[in-house]
Length: 457
Ligand code: XUL
Ligand code: CO
Image 1 (cartoon, rainbow, N blue to C red):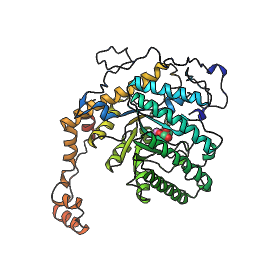
Image 2: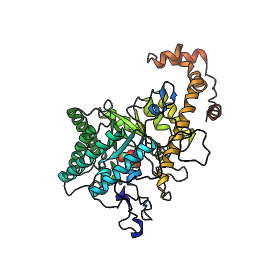
Image 3: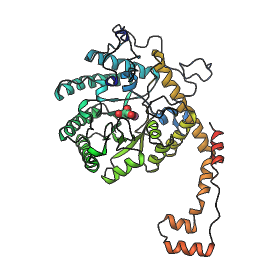
């Protein structure tokens, strides 16, 4: 997001060089599936074959890839130590509507050439804010009209929309959890408009990432009051969504920290508990981002497994952190073992629709070439295609599932079945141990599972 960039930037950074009506990515055509291409050819898919059928659906239908507008078309490469490095020829770095329109057109050319069927955006990614809500909404309407036209022309659809409730200075102490009720109102007004444009663009979902919903210090924070406010905010969202007939899936994206020291949507289990507490669990699902999962101190696929277990895995922000760093680096996912474990869950729960795999990823600050935008997405799509093939084989052969099933087989009949049905008592358990003696330990065989997995990836 441009607002993350340092206040000033080197004048050489601007390299605006776009001739109206020309292609934004000249020399790059639609990316093809070429399984036999040499390793040096990185501008084609070696594994992702969109129309290939796996377990009764095409790869495209299982994986539902999406490009995010904020990193790929608003990311500048700026960091706290350096000026922008990703200076796109069509972007004059101004906040004008013409610039916003060029960016959007570049975006749709990119989606089409890459061969993804979905995109995602924040309201503030696509349209500049005006001096007040009225002009801000007018700008948004103008951009949404263009987006609708480009969606129709290209067939690319909106996976989900979201509101940026964290970049503007007024949101520094949170949006719906801000101690100031007027800021709550500003966030609510923004989300009202966000839901309207999501409906207009046919969004399949609407995401809430709790950007600054949390605290930096407990000394100045009334935690329970803030959580009540957040619960009330989401109730208003559900009411308005139903009122206007927006049918997209509402989603919350957990993250434990960054930018706040502590964020209320800590991880999947925390968000599920929050939703159940405020009676919102029928209206929301979760959008899981593995880089956030690892920030919470969990393994890569942990939150995906947990959310799916509760029937609440709605969508995935498919990215990865850097194991040797430990913050939200939003890297492109390139690890086949990770993608296999994620796709295995997707297959087991029968798909992700209406969610998908959204690449909430940014090329490194050093990856400055235009073709890096393609290479990064192609690499990640191939990683998930390999994960899909491997997960299909794992499920087909059933070796791992059978081993897990066997591990719990004592619950299939007798005492175990009674426990699972909730029909057993402490007295019966005592009686069982009295007559059968202490049980013998059974091996967990972690290494057996790990080496079995390695046979598939
Ligand atoms: C931030 C993050 C966001 C959300 C959308 O860490 O993941 O980009 O996905 O607001
Ligand atoms: Co995300």
